[in-house]
Structures are given as structure tokens and as C-alpha cells.
Amino acid sequence: MTAIRIGGASGFWGDAGLATQQLLQGGQLDFLVYDYLAEITMAILARARAKDPEAGFATDFVTTAMAPNLPEIAAQGVRVITNAGGVNPMACAAALRAEIARQGLALKVAVVLGDDLTGNLDAMARTAPVEMFSGAPFPPQDKVGSVNAYLGAFPIAAALDRGADIVVTGRCVDSAVTLGAAIHAFGWQPGDLDALAGASLAGHVIECGPQATGGNFTDWQDVPGGAGAVGYPVAVLSRDGSFAIELPKGAGGLVTCATVGEQILYEIGDPQRYVLPDVICDFSAVSLKQVGETVQVSNAKGAGVPEAYKACLTWQDGYRGGGYFSYYGLDAAAKARAFADAAIGRARDALTAMNAPDFTETSIEILGAESQFGANARPDPAREVVLKLAARHGDARAIGLLLKEATGLALAAPPGLSGFAGTRPRPSPVLALFSFLTQKSDVTVRVEDEAGEMRIAPAPPIAAAAILRPEPPAKPTQTGATVLVPLIRLAWARSGDKGDKANIGVIARRPDLLPWIWHGLDEIHLRWTFGHFCEGAIERYYLPGLKAMNIVLDQALGGGGTSSLRNDPQAKGYAQLLLATEIEIDQTVLETLP
Image (cartoon, rainbow, N blue to C red; front, side, top):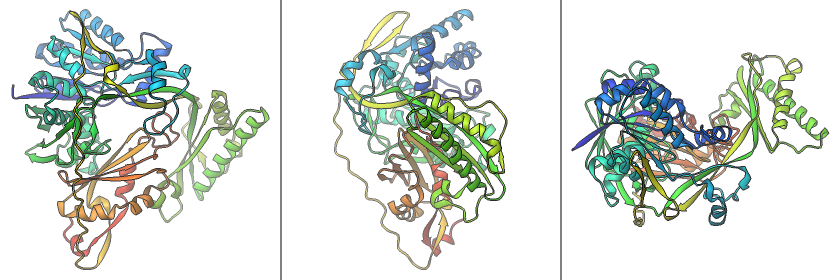
């Protein structure tokens, strides 16, 4: 076999149910892969399992993705890989096997186990006493909801080798569902680093479904058919680890170097140290080539094999809650601020009267007002804004009190308050994230299927060489007067999150524009743009292969998606803020722009 075809059918828990049928009809596939898990999802699933021991997995994988499509999957011989098992992969597999039996099919299901580390809390508290990014202390053990190691792809390949038609995992890295198919198909070994890195990149590109084919794209207005027509991606993966991205036959959307390039940069940090369980990847020299309606991707490099798994623990750290209120008319932002201050003030007075502690954190964001956009603020006061009001507290009753006071303030508030009628928001537990490293030798990974159980030994580590950073673009030569140009005229960009870090990948629309972009987006400019969000360091990385740069903002998300009070706790809109800023270029360059 020289190439395999893999359809990316899910990017998160709750993704559209049409993907499976679309890919089966037009993909000519060997494999279907489904990614359901994020840190937020693991926290939600842990809460579900705490209420019901048979819950804790992505139920719609069974009911929506598989049940209506199992006959066609069996007829075509397409094999399926998913991390829908969440924190309860055995329950997911049991539900799937029951559905297969109900339909009278003979598909074999295998389960990858071993990621669940909740039984080792005492040992982890000793070996990982502080969080690997923030330095926070190990949380109280009685508050822990889940602990999972991020497993790799070789156990998935072993399950396929044993004849599985469908492989269900718990927590593995998102790209492992694609890499596992490639390892099985091509017989790769742990030392085939460049091939492993290439297939991992393919998995990274398709793990978010239509984000590689026109979704979340800077030039969204150029996508044929618009958002409702964007199809799900197919990766055509070759034996050497290079691959092509295309759309299934008949699907809408757009596959270009820009759509694929944006997704390559999505939610990465250092592009020369993208660490996965099976391989440390270097994406700095990755190249893209448009071939008809497909994009060829090559030159990913493997730099080593880590000796540890990343593990993530979720724990209950109090409660949070909030709501949205709209204001319109003159002085809308000032009225919204007065309303928010009054609501928090009333709630604090009530807490004081009860001798209860104050809120641990409050958050007021006035969306559409100058303060929300920092350096990108509009010069004119907004006449229509949305207020987001939120708080955290150790007691759910305190959050309920704030929400009650905000609602009860309506008749005493400044004029212009409005909103869609509905039930009052409720407090919800904060399931905070604690990340650490755990040695692979301390994690027992195994495959369970109809033939029994088999342990999978970890690959030996391969130390990564020192990083040789590419020389960044030289400062461009100025030949005449300079002008300010919105970044969106010069670049495409996409942003995302990793914990409390935000990343913004920026790709030059033409290679000659990159020096202007690199030197225009210096730390001064980035602080000017994101200073109201970012409390930590700012790092910039150069990717000469993509003619791109990656920007990483530390401590920029209010603690990250599982516990943040921010309106955008996952940095989904940060690229849009940056694209709206202006950078300086030569007048003669401006004259060559479309």
C-alpha cells in the first residue's frame, strides 16, 4: 500500500452529524477518524461520570455518527478510530457493541486503556507537586474529578493489527487517531521519526474537521457556498509521511495553501518542539503546494521521542456563573458599567451581611465598547453593547446571589437595558486544569478486544538535538515613504489556546511581505494590541517553510477554558483583533497589493 485515505469526521464533542455520511459518500476512504476531546470536554465528561458510572463518553459518537452509518461502514470496509471513550471508554465500547449486535453486523470493536490515572493520586502528588506551566500546588485530592495521560498512536495501531474494525480510546493526543492508522498501514517503527511527524501533522490538520477546508478562515467570504456548505477533509497520506488534503466528492468548501496553512498553525506553541507521545515534531520547514483542488504537504521532521506523557488532572475549584445583558442608546457602555458595578456591589453587601467571604474573582466585559478592544478601540462611543458579567466563589450560593441581584436590579438600572427573555443562569462548578508529566514506564497501556487483552510497551526515548533556529527575516529596505496598512491586507491568521496560553499564527499572503509583517509585529506592537489580555511573556517563532510566524501569549486567557471568566477563554477571536491592527510598509509595496 503506497497511500491511505483518511476522513476527518469530528473536531469536537457536538460537531455536525452530517460528516460521516458525507465522507462515506464521497471520500473513497480507508479510515474514518473522530476527535471529540479537549480539556473542557474531559472536565464535562468527568462530571457526567461522577453522576452516572455508565456515562463519561461522547454518546453522540454511538447514536449519531455510528448507528445510522454502520451498515455502510461495514459494506465499504472502512475502519474507524475515535477518542470518544473520554473518561469511560469501556462504557462507550459496550454501547457500540450493543448497537452493532442490534443491527446484526459483525464489526469488531477494540478499546485502548491505560490513560486513566485516577487511582495513583498519592504517587502523583509526590512526583508532580506543582503544575508544569503555572507552578500552582497539587490540588486537594478529594476535589479531583479525573486524571488522564495523553497516550499516543502505537496502541491504536496494535488494535488495528489485531483485526479491529473500530478502535475506541480514552484520552490520547488528537492527532493519534490519524497516526495510528498510518502506523498500521505502513508498518512504521518508533524510529521512523520523519514519517511519524508527517502523519502527526496530517492528524493535526484534519483533527478540527472543516477548519482545514474553509471553516474559521480569514477570507471567509471567498469560500464557495458559505459556512453551511463547508465539507469535511480527507487526508491522502503517503508512506513517507507526506500527504495531501482534499474535499470529498461533491462537498463544498475550499482547500488552499492558506486554509491548510492556517490550520497547521492552529493551537501550536514552539513549531520546532511540538511534543507528542510518539515523536517530537519540527514543523518550521513544512512546505505547501497547490495541485488543482488539493494541497500537498511535505517536509515535516521528527526530532526525537519523549520519555514522558503529558497528563492532565481536572479538579473542582469552586463555582462560577454569569450572564449577558445588552444596552443600547446614548452612553450605552457607561450605563452597562454602572449596571454591572451595582449588581456586584449589592451582592458583596449581602455577602458581608452574612459574614461570607468575597468573590475570588469578578469579571466585567463590555463587548462592543472601547475597553474590550484595547488598542483597537473605535474612536466613537458605542451606542449598542453587550455586557458580560461573571464571578467565581467557593460556594455556589454566592454565585446564585450575584445572578439574582443582577436580575433584580432591572427596574433600578440605567435606561436601555434589554435582552432575550429566558431562565436565569445557574452556578456551575469550576473544573480547573492541572498539567504535569508522568513517566511512560509508570503507565500501563493495553488493548482490550474480543481476543482478550494485550499490553503495549512504550517506545524507548530518543533525545532531541539542540534546536537550530532559522534566521528571522532581515529588516526590509525602505525605498520611499511608508504607510500604515491593516494586517489583513498582508496576511492570513488564526488563533487558539493551550491552557492559559494563546497562539496566533500569521501567514504572509506573499513571501515578500513577510519581512514587513515580522518586524511590524514586534513585542511593542503585540503589547499595544493585547496588553489588556496578556499578563505574561510574548514569544515569536519563525516558520520559513510556510512564510509564517507563530505568536504565543502567556497568561492571556484568565486561567484557560475550564476555569476562565473571559468572554473568549480560548482565544478564538485574537487573530481577528490582530488582523485589524495596522503595520507600516513601504509605499511602493502598497501599490502592488490588490
